[in-house]
Length: 357
Image (tube, rainbow, N blue to C red; front, side, top):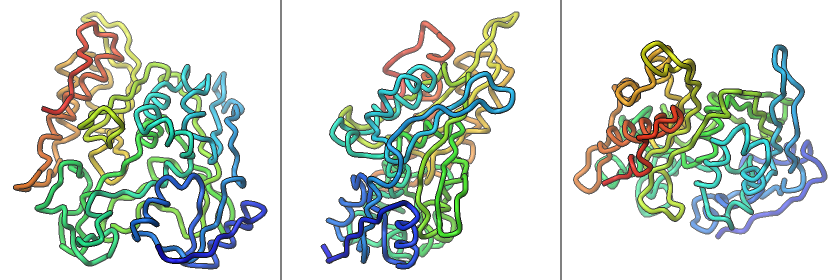
């Protein structure tokens, strides 16, 4: 580990100014991701700026927006994952978020990890964390070892496969962010030029020609809170995660979904639906094609699988003799169908469906 300076400013504005003045400085909160990368020699900031006590650790009610009878929630950036998962309104009104948090990590990590830090986990893979291998995210222009390598956990949507110096097929690891994408979350940010609000769906970026950059944040911008709007559809929501082992592995595929089902002359109909996928892209993947295919149609297993097929029609899995990921395409279909059958209150829903073979 390289030596670094440590700063503990008195307020958030001072912390922002400190980081903005040093291109190699970084914020430190729970540290569950950054400290690992410091130990591995992947991150080497000149200064760590401790913001643990500078952002809110409260979950507050928001005033109702125009036309709403109830307001949403403001989640301080320093709220611990364990506290967020246990919050009364989160469990009752945003169950998809509570389920995602509980699926995301061990109790020990949830007690340390913060809301802001969870969103800022590096999009990464095993090669990113292995300094002996080429990785465009770690060393731009060096190449992507996952292309033709072990790619079981890698992206099938939105990834860059070429040119070699820009290729990146890593996936974003956060479970919480996938749920927040479904809930229409707004990320509140304080930066050198003031405050701004960023829709979570626009917060992450695809690799494009700069895979080293994960988000749209500028250097020195600090997450201060996340707002969840009131969303009646979210009361009927769920998070389904498929992984290689039950004890806190990253998702091979995950589904966050909220759905409103109404009665129709020929059976239940999907009045509205919101879907996001995890484990398939550089960012939480909002499945808008699947949503469009489902709205106004029957709430049946066949419709759910057809919607999944529409979403993955342009999937580009990684082919590899040592571990490709084409299996994720049918896995998305099975996992999405199982999640939506649960929301449709289908008694035939199989709790084991979606598990990898």
